[in-house]
Amino acid sequence: MCKAYLSLIFLFLFLFGFGQTPTVVDVKIEGTKKIKTSFVRKLINTKAGSAIDSVQLNEDVIRLKRLPSVSNAYFHTFKSNEDGYDVVFTIEENFTLIPFANLFSSSNDDFAFRIGVQEFNFLGRNMTLGGFYQYDVFHSYGLNLRAPYLFSNKLGISLSYNDFASQEPVFFNDTTADYRYGNKGFEVLGLYELNFKNRIELGFSLFTEDYQYLFGATQSDIPQTLNVDKHLIKFIFNHEDIDYHYQYLNGFKSALNFQYVRSSDENLPDFLIGFNDFVFYERVGTRGNWANRLRLGLASNMETPFAPFTVDNNLNIRGVGNTIDRGTAAIVLNTEYRHTLIDKNWFVLQSNLFIDGGSWRNPGGDLSDFGDNENLRIYPGFGLRFIHKRIFNAIFRIDYGHGITKNPSRGIVFGIGQYF
Image (cartoon, rainbow, N blue to C red; front, side):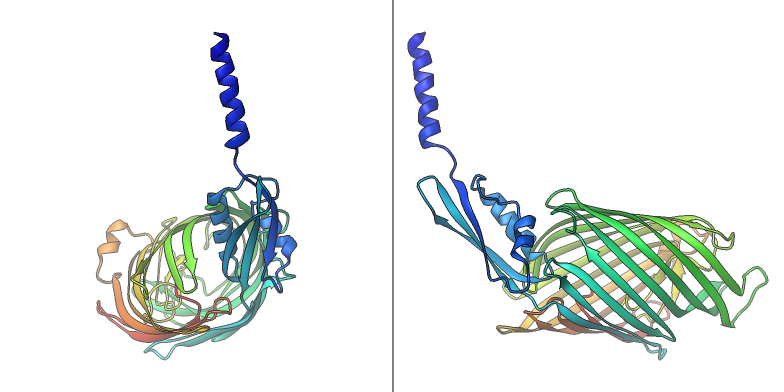
């Protein structure tokens, strides 16, 4: 018995003395110019004194590559002493003060644009500060601050103020009227990272919606003027498992957005709305990327001309026109193949073949509306991407879509950034 105990003791001493995991002696950050190294140290989970963990090191690299200010990141380990290693994270920074523009038109001669500027590395801590101006018949503007790691490497905040105005069609009894639509208010969201792949956002918004009749059909029970104070509670759940390598993406992500909206006017009653975007990317060979987005959306099914889901060039169906229909539920699938034609040190030219398709439930209708030819829209098309590899989101896109279902239209959509 004593010999057995002695054997166990000797085995324990052997394992402890010769089999212990090497530790991190020091963590070094290289390549940073505008990013604060203190911010990087706070963000990553590899710390001095912790055990060397290859899984954790790879997760830290992916976490860094997700930052708008980082175009690429990698790590090396170097033997420091008998028991430990130095870890060096090398970061290639993006240029992050970015102007942007979205331009869109259709065969109906609709035209609108949005221009603005955003700093994605404000104060060197990967906070986003930005503003925009939009012209869509009327003038709009907005300001926003997003600081996902303001309080810790998991907790942050988002603040925004918007004053929107646009000409919006309202649909009822197979007729259409155009209204001046205004939306003015602010939003506050708390941001929290549950773990490496999952994060949540929770907050509220206070805003005022304003509808002013311009022209078109009228009906006695459809008001020509509305000014309604509203508030909403918003919950967002994001799951992301994407591997980034410059313009190439591989993996899956899901974004759930749920809102409860309360109104002070019975013409715009309280309602619930939720939608989930499922996005899947797959590398194809060395120069191809297959990208897919499926949106499933559902809202309170009220018979109202002011339904929340819209069919729009810049949101879901390229080439269809600007806000051509509304619904209380939506199914939209976007699929496209991106192929790199030119790939230089800083510049990429990418071609794009796509099919956008979707259908909507009419306000007050039922789920069979999804199969109605009047609601189904399919738009194949093609486009180009002009990409700067060292400037965050510096992707100028141009797409042309042409409808192949009932009452088709066609149109060109310009924008900054990939469509999805």
